[in-house]
Image (cartoon, rainbow, N blue to C red; front, side):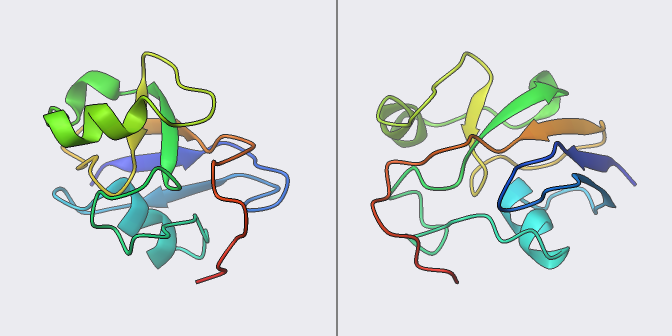
Length: 112
């Protein structure tokens, strides 16, 4: 099973975390299933950018982003070439290293 290394984030995951996941799971679902409360204001429907992550390693193993995701990513804070919406990034068989950006464009966290 592939592993996802979530790098430390001051509020969401201060110590970082390594989790094993099944192929075919989104990065967002993997985070939530392992107690990493990543924001997902649109309930994972690809309608916002609050679950934006930067895939530091393993980016090429993910599914290709569709046009809607790419358009939304243009609005994300701290956009980088390896940015994805974690609700749309599907894990394959390669390990990933994921960074959760310090900020989102969300004014208020909904604390799902």
